[in-house]
Structures are given as structure tokens and as C-alpha cells.
Length: 169
Image 1 (cartoon, rainbow, N blue to C red):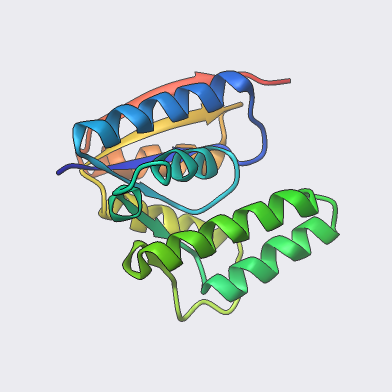
Image 2 (image 1 turned 180 degrees about the vertical axis):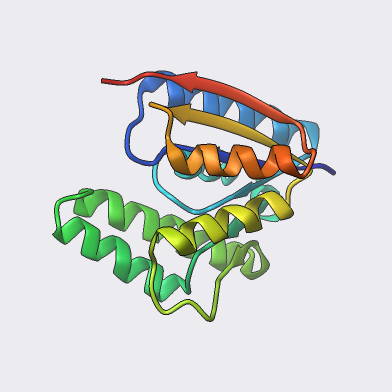
């Protein structure tokens, strides 16, 4: 079994991005591979949702969080309160991550030391995703810096990178 890191943009998405992510994950799971995500909105969410459709899906997921699930949930709810994301997005993501943990506690890898969720801890989480992956699939929207960080780290480790880029207004 090969572990494939999934990275992409959380801010903007489209039906095309969602279709591409779901198609990629479906093919990977049916081939017997697993996915590694960072537990964020949009690309990570689509990938995890697709994997969870399979009976063995929770055994084929590794999700690295930049903090504990409780801290991460509080962060997303705070961001919803600030209007950065919607409350619905926050609650759907928290529900999904809770379901991953319920179905396979080993699939959700929480960072127990980080007290806050910030850019530094997100980028450190990207390193965890790359370290746990044999290769990377990147779905990069609008030259996302977070996705680029993950791509650069995978390439620096000599890991194969499949890159799809999108522009969304």
C-alpha cells in the first residue's frame, strides 16, 4: 500500500476541483492505496469524504491536525465567527474529523503540544503530511502558498508530485 499526500487550497474551490479530488481519491482507494491529509476545508475535506465512502476508508486515511481536535474545532468556530468561513463549513469539518476519529482513532493524528492554530503550525503540519507520504497529489488554486509549501517540501524530499493548478476568481 502506498500513502499519497493530498494538498490543496482551502479558501477557494470549484466543481472542477472537487471532481478532480474525488476522482483521484476514488482511484487511489480502489487501487488499495491510502491518503494523507491535513484536515482542512475544501480539498482535504473532499478527499476525506470520498475515502470515507468505502468500508475500509477509515483504515486508508491519515489526517494530521496542527493541534488537538478540540483546539482545532474551536479555531474553526472562531474563524466562522469572524466571517472567514461559514458556521456550516466549520461544523461540517468538525463532524467529519470526529467521524474519522470514531471509525479509526489511529487515523486522526493530533498535535498535542500546540496551544494555538496559526500559520507556523499549519506549515509544520504540512511537513507531517509530506513525511507520512510516499508521493503527493496537489490541487493548487490561485497559487496557494500553503499548497506550494507542501509541494516544495515533497520535492525537497525527492517524492513524486502530481500537480493540478486552477484559477478561480
